[in-house]
Length: 574
Image (tube, rainbow, N blue to C red; front, side, top):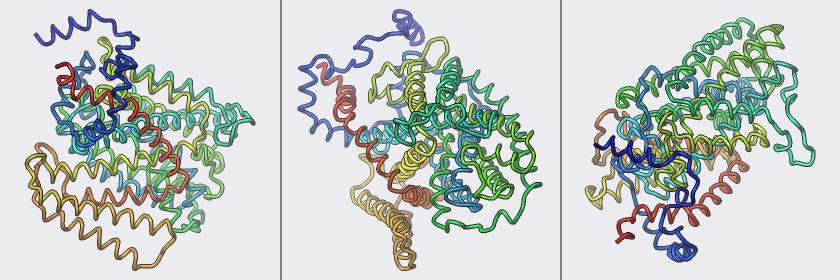
């Protein structure tokens, strides 16, 4: 009966709709008078939403009704492993490695990848527990909404969208760079320079726009079709990666590794913060949980298994690059293809460029799937217009959400250079992963109306010490303080904060798959993510603050009132 009713409702209304009611159906936006009334109630409404938390049932069942049509459960663990490989490999290793080895880390870029890989793996553990128990399209947005509340989830949602837009735009620009390098040595060959625009925004890239439109068009056509194309392409990519590693070491010169730390240890961590972009994409697997046949089994296999292997591959590829070519001679835009050209293997230049293009293409394909599903769940919660939550009845994909992400990322890619994009993306990603680790600790140690108040206060005190000491370590490092006293004090505070939390009784036990060594692994994830955030530099902080300020303004003017109306719709209708 429920299926017949759903089918009947979708046949009475066209999927393609553009009325005001579809974009702003909430009571606060029905007239100028109702909106003014809502604005005057901003303070009490904000207090209400700051304290509000969602539930697993709400995220899994209630909100999915907003999409009108279900997403198709068509993915297995095999699909998830290859989706993870296709999303992650190519989204950074071919893009950021040359830039960071040349500018910040030198040959020690391999250590930067190892550090970022460890941090990413800790985040993978946290994501996996949530995704196995709450298999919903919203991913980290839904997880944070359940554990940390509406407002924190919105800040994360804004950064999720920022990550999606910047990540897609960066890949589009990189795709253009590699394609241009196959024609000429100049990676900016196909771009249009406009002198009147500021540096970083003065190289217009129409090819990046075309690539984004094609990739997102394929993603909209169907999830299983996109997964199959990714699998075929990833097999080819895997073969070429083996070639890069093997022939890279054959033509390696150990003299190119000297000096190993040309920019010092600080350069290694600065590079680690940026190359974290290379690991972004694993959260796309968690994001596909709603379309996975057996998420409780398939997601842990897909996430943990694939990311462990990818970390090893990244370290080997980074080492091969810096042994082939002196770090000072690495091309920052198309590192691998130009490196093979410099050692006399011109034909390999084209093979590597094709692999890089394939890697970035599959990253765009899988990214399109995941980004649209983030957007869909955010729209289901009415934080953006709910029309973007609609799932197309034939393709089973969120077409509106995909079009939204595509159009904005295409505009960003047209103007913004790669170095501008990468620092913004890394900050957003690290910030979200840190919040996920915090949310996991909250999930294990706090249950509303169950946890005694004295236990809650002890937990909050330990959490405050963990976060505060982690910020302290990052601040000490970036102040160029190298004395052992400050680090010892901060390290001991972190240890005792985590140690104290370990003695508290856990309020919830995972039903399916759980992160081991709680609270130690989530606590370590928090300190590593905050340390890497601190290594990004002042400019990245300023960009993040400006973007977050814009998000908060939008929330106070629109998102707050929409979510408040949805949460209290029964009360309002009465």
